[in-house]
Image 1: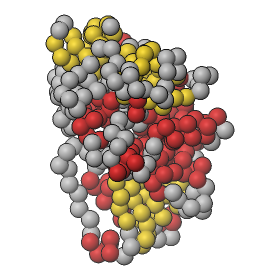
Image 2 (image 1 turned 120 degrees about the horizontal axis):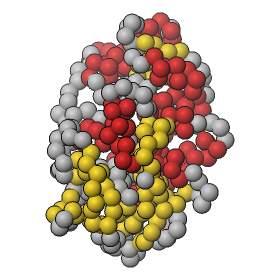
Image 3 (image 1 turned 135 degrees about the vertical axis):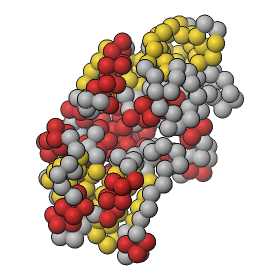
Length: 365
């Protein structure tokens, strides 16, 4: 069948809108009519080839829509179901079987290699292969071939155009707090970088009962929004030393810190802003091979550093929880979102990456 897709043809290039052909779903696959798709920082880092997804490629990994067809063996969704599309995982390895799908050993080939594991792609253009299967979905298109594993069924009355970002960026920020760090009520937390991931962490920290939530950024508009969403303190990194300020604010350091920026110096500052026994989570996606340094003696005194992928979530469990939190008024992530028509995709990139006017751009198909 034919679809309309946004294709990255060369490193650092603009998205090119064009007609493509999409295969029928194979065994274990699902054809989804995409209603909307969020734009994530990872889409842009792959555009720039920080990760080696081969080009040309259809990106997009925060899709949401309605199931059109299912392949043989699919049992958890059916035609007509509303779904949010999240990351892909094998479902059979020890990590997946223990509920740690975000740490599946096949995560990289399933999400970033642009092909099914057998080397095929479900998308062609004028008879030529186009790389797809990005996060198991490639949802910058009017139709997507996804896998059953990365489909999350939601209620029939769910606001489906809004929900795509729960599949990655918002899930990552909220899950880093709720699933990975799990701060006790009364804790303090410092969040470095308050884009969509960091602001989701702010909201989750408030819902968790953290009493001191410190937001660090260079964008005053985003810092103000962080305060409105639950940050008790904000630090403008343009004019303040964040590490020193956090230590002074907390009387020795925060209980927890999160780095969303993927900047080595910022990660170092985040770790050093925690007290002894403090824990830091790194969630930003840096260019492959990026290294950072820490003071070994500083770490010796009980500090912890952990990496977190996709908020350490099981999407089929966590995404419905986030929707329920939003319905209860505890997680108003819609305040992060700006909608664009699909053909405005390059404007959405500009306003996400350059001007910063869009925190979470959502493309409506």
